[in-house]
Length: 605
Image (tube, rainbow, N blue to C red):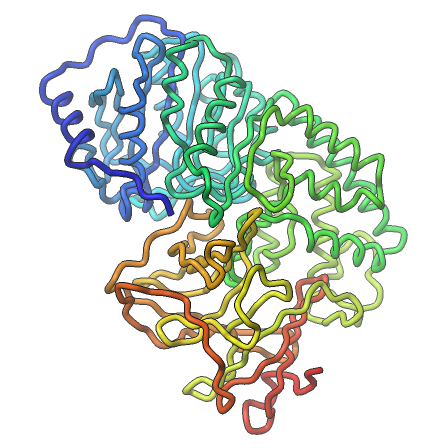
């Protein structure tokens, strides 16, 4: 992970104290070309590692000329700020001007997950910082179409859903006076659903389909306003994307993506997506189970964002372009219409993905089966394409083996719910089974069947001398990321490990905390002295599983992933089969009677 020079004892602190103690805040009644508004919900990103402070430093050092633009921040949502000026817990409005930061208004303890706070900030900026163009940047975690944006640490991790943001934008009058651009310096927010909602309130959107590194955007892009203060949101968005990609140049371990979207064109993308899924739904009506198998196998292979371990895999955001390409052979005209609409809506997009990302994502239920009811209810409330919403409901009903699908479901033994479908495998993973101290059999060392690049198959991963359980979480062009379900200093998390050309035996990126549906931006470092324990799956031969927490240990100064030959006395190599319904069948070469009877099927090939 890139580490910035924090300079907390230098540039930021000196500038903050000097500005705060000596200068008075001037009136900003002059109409300027731009007002850039940053809704900075610091959350644990600031409390743990000062990432919001880092970006304030970037803004101060960007060289932005105050004659070209007003730069106004609302800080809050954070238990602790890692500088001596921004107060903990409270919300404060700041003006950044010519390298200095000025406190404008201390609001007190307000909730950054309350749409009213966003309304106040937007109206305050419009009233006090008039401009020809306005841009809004939402800074924090993100979770896509179902979860929305942000986590306020002070208010029990409260966040802004897409409907909350729509309420705030409407109440602030943005429908009559559109933003020039809406930006998300957060994960997973380049969604067509956010685009459709935002199209009433902004001209352009800059956001990422994928996860973002913790450092987020490079705010040096602000200097480009000096050259062309009247620049459009589309052109400025291109600078934002290019600065971001250049900042992380050469980084393969973490996914990178930003796109610039013409919000006026997102409605057409949604409409064409609905048309595509209407014919998919019709196909299930004519011949349900064969059609569903065909669609589910394609869904399982579609590029998905925000993937973690099986304990936290509810995001279900997919690249719309890849989704259409996976369906192209079945419905070429409808798929082509989706791709054409995407090309018109996405003005600019760059990434380091293993596929060609098309710049917009959508919600497509699959991994998050356990939260299907909540997610589908939330999606329906967004008021998107009726055809797409109905398709999701029917697809989920068959996926879960329910009887409320639009047509009568046949062939109960063929899959759905927990009935494993032997005839429709999605993938086969290698796994290592270990007998724990308490006698339970657990899965450790899981690997995909196409590791890239991994050590010898006879070796299995350990951390601190204990087997770790790895689940594939994402891919870039030159690396693959795995998630190790764990507990870190009392918090459930995934430890993210990347395998790439420069790290064939694994590079530990850090901890990604489990925050419900909202995905943490970047990873947190594992420090010496931190307390860690791994979660392991206890398999059952009916496809169900439970989780057990392993022995806690203390992280040392050099925590690395090590590869060892398994001890044959207490381990056995087996398989995990996954069908198109995301059901799992655990197969291991173990002695059932002497182990645990129904834990693992004794029929390994």
